Length: 174
Image 1 (cartoon, helix red, strand yellow):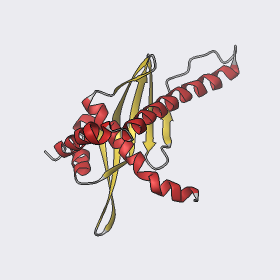
Image 2 (spheres, helix red, strand yellow):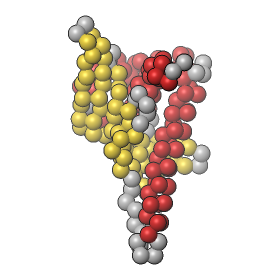
Image 3 (tube, rainbow, N blue to C red):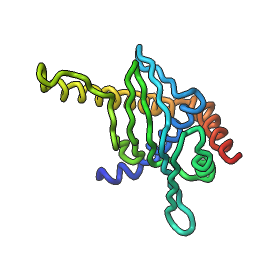
Image 4 (tube, rainbow, N blue to C red):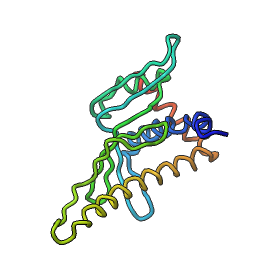
């Protein structure tokens, strides 16, 4: 099976992940426990949703604070799917901002915490510190995605999580 065929068969997982992540950020304030680290993640800025209708593919982009994105929640309740979102991730005293795409789970417009080091003492240190910060955020999102996949294939998904997610989505219509 070709790579693109595999992607097409599983592309729904990225969209489900972003919808679930949005649900968790609103119902549990985006708090996750990754090992001994407590992190917080929230939607901020822009969410893009897509859905098929009789005229073809329809794309809706909403901007603003996630708590006030009534149009995006309504679109979600009208069978649109999250295909891209701006996320803010916070761990310890650091904060990252990035756009996450649902198809390949690509990071776009990635902004790390500011790196403060003296270029004269260790010019390569800036590069390595920046790579460390990028890896920390990517690893955290990977771990959250792994948590989602474990939940998605568990008996808890159809019994508890999916009904709660569906109720939350339908609440977007009001």
